[in-house]
Length: 190
Image (cartoon, rainbow, N blue to C red; front, side):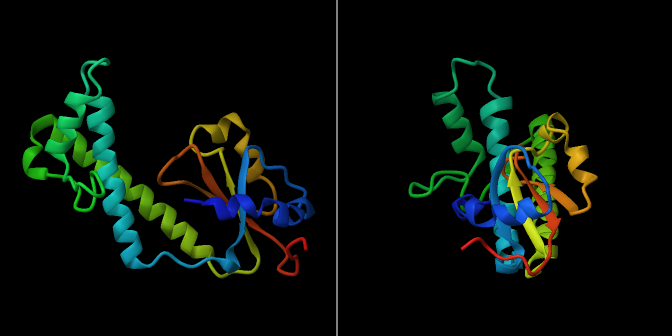
């Protein structure tokens, strides 16, 4: 998941993107991978815990809510019932899901959502870590993840010689990181 730092570096790194003659639609940030750090095992486990709990919270708030006008109070009660709650941090942090209260179809749906969320985090961090520390890789953060990839002709980007790989953001799949091979001699604009 990119941060404000990626966005603020667009001006400084745009010249590198221009040298490979590639126009990225819906550009949201740029980062040289040589400046990044790998996700450590503890960080990945924490992300998995957060994202799996968030996936179940999303089920409760959006899928298990039977009345569109009843979002606030009953949904809040359901969240507090199925997820751990902390006055300071809210829910579903830090511990996550109360599996002993999930049964039948809801448990099955929650397990599937958890599996998908875990898979997204592992996929994202694995691909990201693969390029960390390399001086010949530029990471482009753009709002063309998920189905947006097809809408914004991602197949054309994939055919570009600099294109290596893309991975959807684990938190919001409408965003993605695109990894591009660049000349390591290229520098930031001063």
